[in-house]
Image (cartoon, rainbow, N blue to C red; front, side):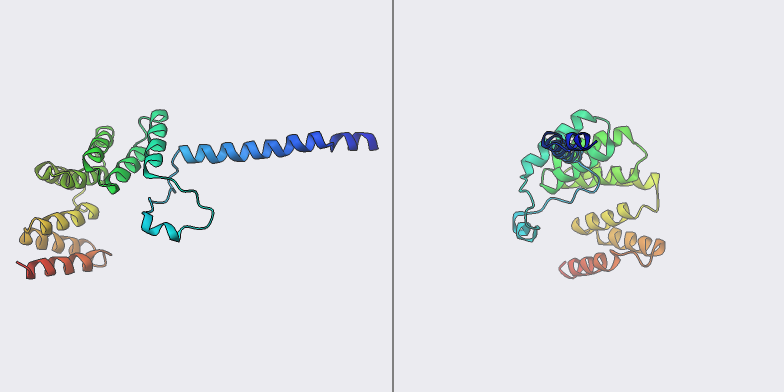
Length: 197
């Protein structure tokens, strides 16, 4: 009996057990990393890099883009993944590329007001203002109370110096949700730019 216990706990078996644990943990990490989990933190700029916890791996934007592309090759119709990729491109200032990916999401989910709003915002930032306004209006036709669309409309109206439209949209937002988190910021920005006419 003693011999069987010794055989079961031999150094060779222990090494295989440790190797299995390491391989399992590594495989799990790689799988999670390449699937670009929904809990993935937003990209950190170099200026914020000092706030990262010690031991955090340095990953360049190009590496993140490559990971997104690899994940999208495996899951070409994953709209959540496409949206995250498009948002990442947008955050990098690559609005025209973001437009392409948001268009793919909208093609798969034409009644998704969030996707239409994201597409509109990317179009606006890519200089395609007429198309952007069409997408914002389409999003509102899907959901007339869609606060993200209304919020972004206030921003683009204000940026475009269409103050009456911005004020009207702000009042609409206030009527829908007087405690909406972004209202005060939008009002302050509108007032600031109106004063600079």
